[in-house]
Amino acid sequence: MDYGGWYDIDIPERDFRKLINVRFTGAMGPPGSGRNSISNRYIRHFNVLYIEPYKDDSLNYIFSTIMDWLFVAKNNPPFPQPV
Image (tube, rainbow, N blue to C red; front, side):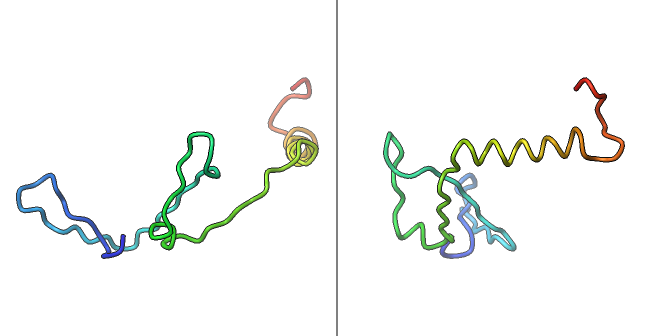
């Protein structure tokens, strides 16, 4: 990542493969319970965001609102009334 690509070690010439217009994303849980932390040297390539886990009441409200919109509020719902 530091040099804009990787060397292709599968061929004898070991050519450098330059990466153009590539975005890296990743997701991980916090360290602990068998999860390893990652080094600052690697993490500097990313914007680190932490999102506090939602409470069950909040998740219930969010998803029930979405489901209500999908099944009830839309004009011409795509599902029959019993669903």
